[in-house]
Length: 495
Image (cartoon, rainbow, N blue to C red; front, side, top):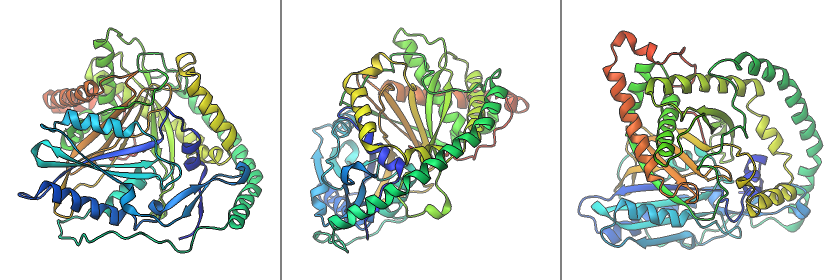
């Protein structure tokens, strides 16, 4: 294992972090220990297995080292560590309800990771009703994105239950030893020397993309797929400067129901998830005396991982902007609007090229970007400037079958991404073993109780499913009111 310099997107998640804008992800999992298992022993066993498997992965055995004078992005440097120092445990007081679990996870998510250590923590939460066990894996977004996170999950769990040796955990040594100061300086200088060529490439890429982008934008301007741009979101109660506090909620719907809605309305799985979020947010705003009159803006991360990226935890992600018709209440109209918007966003995204964000991120200067992010948060400019977006919505296809750690079954997996300044809520979904598990994380200043929106999402999916099953078979495709979009069937968004 050797020193590895961060790519631009990885580093950007570091530069954008402030005391109120935490850039970690907080994966929350519910486990069901084997029947009759002793709860305390089950918790210890799960912790030991997961720690052992985490530190077998290089990304979890490195710490950040800044480049001298900030002339290049920081580097991951291998180090020795004691795995148990990254583990925390707590027990919920009786009755151990899901609401208590949400509160506990919210408190965990409210605290940034220590930059002086490898950027991850493992929390085990006992005392959950039904004898279940909670596991929270908190990882900085600079380490991995959604796709890489699922790869990590695949290495932590097995396809069948297994008896595993959980002997004492020893300190983990790394080879070679930490990089020398001279090596760090040489690596940073080499990276800085490549910057002019990278800048020229980014400029040429942008110039080449300008004409297709303008042509596509003009072609879509008079349709439902009219381009949605950042900073075009109407201000609502969702748009606030952040505090350091976080509140979380969980939702779950049937994957079979989502796919039936997709089939009945001639749309995509992504459309269904976005439509569910749009309906839930619209109902939430109306319930709080703020009836929306215009669509809001969703940032939708898109994975750029290729087949040969397997094993590379770096962020490979771009973003699309999609209008969410929170002002509509008719399910068919919402689906049609989302379908057209997603098609248009994909065409705009394709005209720009998937690598543009990564190209410019490579050039992001650490000092100025960190200063700008800090001032934006400290001066609470999100209260006065146009919001860049209203909500982040990501969704990712996960494993279709049950997973196990030791003899404990993974019952549910709720992803929780970062909350960004100006948009007080992040909604993330992952499919797992026949369900779509949804994690919502919000700043309480914007959304005090995200459980309202989680319940609204579940209701919206149920309503869309009922509408699809009631429609005559010959009318089902027409109810989508647009042509079929050539998105993959599985969700492709990350973040």
